[in-house]
Length: 427
Image (cartoon, rainbow, N blue to C red):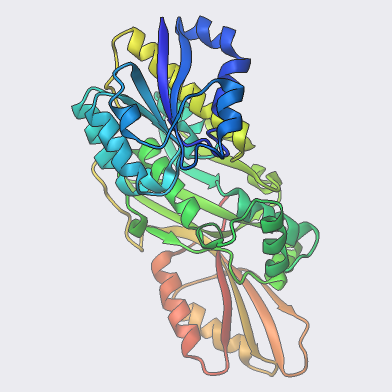
């Protein structure tokens, strides 16, 4: 038996698919009971990809209908990225009875329910393991290995660009601008890094992780999103002095059936496993009632790591086709969306303030914090320049509602300047 697939895109990840299928052909054939063959690949420029076509004997086309209308092709693998035309191509493939594999987290986060419903209506599989954390098999781990467990919280370093930048800012004292430039030179960051540095890419992945962990379809607008743009070296140094490392953390947790999700810089205790995740690597940390604490670590991007996850999905669908069991959702867990209120979202927080270097300033902000019932864990005053002083506060646990109130109150004080507010990871 031969299983034919159509490949949409032969870029960084797409070019890794034929390599893996060829290098591990014997193993894959044993697992699936079939030989997997790329019947056709959709490309923008046939001449540009001719070397891959010759190397792996792949027929090329610039016409999507040559793949959609080919009755022998049973799986379409979308690796084009962006929303359109990927969304239209996937819907068309599913409507024509073709199973689909994609790594498109932007598309899944924004139109996932539409695609999932279309797959179900047409008894097709839709798998997307590679959409979160590249080569880390986290989605299948949650939906299979942790199916009998109850996840309480999932934390992710799920953007390699920002983790690389933060590693350099911590270890080499690079400024944000210099770290970004180096990440771009090494190919970790795009020329327009907005989605990465502003936390949007990580938020897309938290939408998907929330679906898998808690069964709830949340939207980007349900997530509090903050990036690392403008993160100061002074805050990184102060975090280090206080025993923390600043990481861009995607977080989703559930309390009494209410879910909350956020993305932003977080002070992570140095002894926490996430603090040791460096450079472009990703990690997903899960708290659950059965297993307790577990972390899944590996490369979050790259040709072969991501392509390996994609091929894993192809193999799963291949087995389902042979058993005539296609049409079951990748994630069957589903609950009604129930968002936590600001009063239910609780964390420790880090505040960085610039105040006049004169008597009475500590009393001023102490009165504000006391009025809103916020207590301190640590207070540090950095060396003053004679006119202004920098004060850093780490609070005890407080609600998001209290954060809003104290932030507004501090901004009303004419000679105070609120420099930064970050979450502090609960142990």
